[in-house]
Amino acid sequence: MVPGVLQTEAYARHLIQSWRDIDDTLTQRQVEDRVAIRLNRQKRFLPPESSHIWIVMDESILMRTVGGPDVMAEQLQQLVDFSLLPNVKLQVAPLDRPRGVFEESFTLLNLDRSNPLEQCLVYIDHNLTSQFLLDEQRSIYFEKMFEYFHRSALDEETSRTIISRYNRDASMV
Image (cartoon, rainbow, N blue to C red; front, side, top):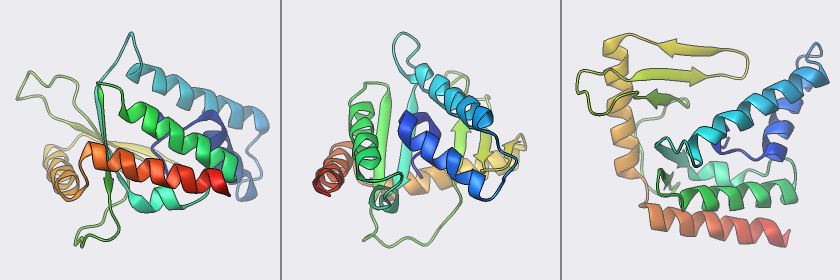
């Protein structure tokens, strides 16, 4: 799925609401609270805060229709819009390139890039649980994995072109 910090409200709501099919204790209020939290996280990447973010996402994410054609078209346009921000790097890992390493989604948080001793924190967000990894060896492992993924992904401009192509296709449905 599209990383939470780049999701539109409709895309996020559809994903979170879908969990009610599995967890009948999830209330509509909880759904709305989770959507609000997700959207508030996005504000960190918009002016005036403008934290830096670098995302490598699999092309398959662009192919899967979430919430219907209109929701998906809006989501793909938001990816294009975010990719144009100066503090956002967005790359697509194409399906037609061989890849030997696969891993679940993860986030590396580096709070102080100017300090080489600052360890990245690894955040793994599952639908039911979230986890921070504070172990230095595991952090290094995830940093190397991110390097591997971003080297095998398309450059930013080509990625934006691919996203736009999927957006045109979604808009025609």
